[in-house]
Length: 227
Image (cartoon, rainbow, N blue to C red; front, top):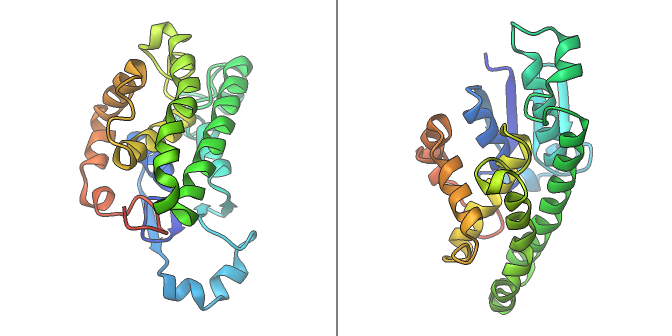
C-alpha cells in the first residue's frame, strides 16, 4: 500500500508539482480523483479543513494547502533514508529543503514568489481568460525575470534554483514554467537560463518518465479550463 494519497480533481492544477516531486524521488502514491459532481454534493468539501483541495495523506498525517504539502515532503523524504539518522538529517541535510538554514530561507523566498506568480495565473484562467490573456502574456516577462535572476546567481544558472541539489521549490517552478509554455508558447525564448533549466530538469530519468506518462499528459493543466 503506498504511504501517500493525493485527493484532488482530475487536473494537474496545484497537485502536479507534488506528483513531480514524488515521481522524481522514486515514491509511489495513490490517487483519489474527485469529480465536479462529487465535490458539488458538499460532504467532502465540508470535511476539508479549509473547504478546498488538495488533500494529502502521509500515513496518519493529513495535510491541506499545496505549499505545506511540498514543504513537508521537502523536509521528510531525507528522513526516510536508512543510512542517516534523524538527528544528522535535521542538523546537516534537509533533503529537498536545501543543505542549511540559509538555503532553506532562500527556498522559502522562492516558493513564496512562485505562489504570487501562480495566483496571477489562476486569476487569469478562472476569471478573465478571454479578455485578459493578451495583457497577461505582455506582462509575463516581468514575472519570469526574478527566476532568471535567481538562476544566474547560482552557479551561472547551471544548477538548481538554490544550491547544488534539487529542492521542493524546483518542482514548483518547473510545474509553472511547463504550464506557461503551453499557455504562452515561446514565453521563455528571452530567458535562456530558464529555458535550459526546464530542459535539464525535464530530462531527469524518473521525472521524464512521469512527464511522458498518459496520467500526466491527459490531465488538463487547470481544473477550471480545459487547457
